[in-house]
Amino acid sequence: MKPKEFKRWRKAHGLNQTKAARKLGLKLRTVQYYEKGERKGKVVEIPKAVSLACFAISCGIDDVDFSEPKGKPITSDVKRFELRSDGDES
Image (cartoon, rainbow, N blue to C red):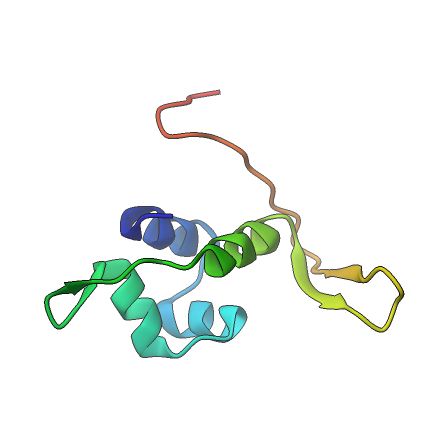
């Protein structure tokens, strides 16, 4: 996930930076670094785990209950699911 994609994801879900940080379990400053793509002049890459968490949230999964043998998603009331690559208009 690239910084512009991360910011677009956040805005598409109606989240400000603070709410996105809380939802993803990150610090506000980390969200700011991810959106900027750098910290103190050095490139900051968005970890795959964060990208996957964004995808899960997009699918309506807020958390996972691992007390179940195989785990079970805990979904939110908001159902969002979108799979599109850049430039795909469908």
